[in-house]
Image 1 (cartoon, rainbow, N blue to C red):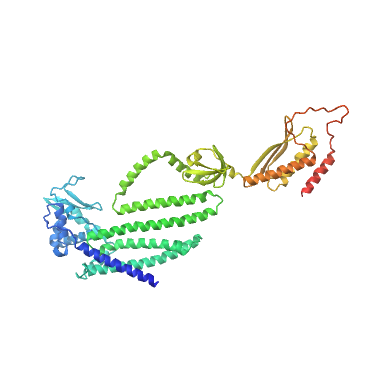
Image 2 (cartoon, rainbow, N blue to C red; image 1 turned 60 degrees about the vertical axis):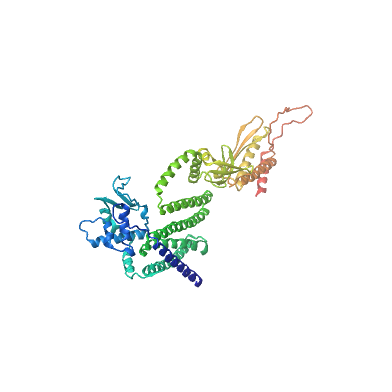
Length: 544
């Protein structure tokens, strides 16, 4: 704890010295010109700024750049001139005087009038040529207090006035009151950072416990609470920095750094929040029967992270004063051209969305369709991977899967087994009847057959056999279990046929002579029914 405090104090001292050095250097590089004639936009702005500097301070001369609004006293105009400089210095608005138009007849290209707009950030703040001279327009003079209140909200203008009232003594090129203000801001930021980190850590710990996410304190809570606290602290510093009244050039440079760090920490915060949200979704997905949502969570994680990074980059560009609306318009036009060139890719993307929404199959299901037959292994954004029964992998575009008929064998509640049991024509009717009843008993006794729905009947007379329909269902989850169950049932059928003396037929042509001199008849003698029943009863008795 002591080491952490020492390091923090060392960083604070470093930041303080950097501020003092940077502000002193900027103070020495203020660029002004002696031209205060108001005959051009350049001379008007130079007159306002030139006579509000320490070495040339004269409010009565500086106020000449403001259009004299009727009914507004000289003191109020002087107050507006000071507020305007505070706005420039507070937001870090810096224009080299040499870059401002010096032509007396300057015309704005948009309005085709003698107007010079200061900045797109202040649309109502502009210069206007009136009776041969350039002034801050009447609208600009009236709107200055509104803009000033926006730059110094929550009574910060009163804090600024209080600090400036401490005197004009300097330290390392900057005023004592500026050093004091800097210390106050740094102290507030450190306190806010410590408090927010502690509160955020406790709150996140409770949330994780409530969500039953088994994560350690160091893996999620600290990495998430720190960027949150830093984002708030930087936002607070951006809000309070204008009261230091450093030169606009230095203020602009440091505000640029803070405005780049602000979206960066916000991006880190949301990026890590995506991991927590997706971990929770993964936990919920593990509790469901479907395995497709287990595959969806990693895809969702990657998609959300890409979206967060793109939004973060747009925020950075916006804080750099780039017009992102133009950029977005260009991206939309380029996106249209890209969409036309990549129709198949987009079709596959929407196909994957339809698979995740409709869920026609899930990971591990046995599916069949046009050109594929195997087990679903992975569902991606572009294609679905199917492991065939040859142990090869087939990748099928999701757009095609969405358009074709897919038979999901894995969603079967029961697995059907249908076959014809063919016995010879010389089998007596009583034997066929008992054999059929025995087949039904096999179905009833097997532990994995459906008992409420099956059909076993003497169905037809075939070309060379008596055909018995054997139509049953197995209640097993996988194909391997189905094969095992078939094996067991088929063996029982064979044993029953052997026990009853029933012979299976096969395609043959037989010359059958019932009587032959000197030889016994080939027609088998009929077995007594009671004897057959006893044999069958004894057979099933042994199975119990």
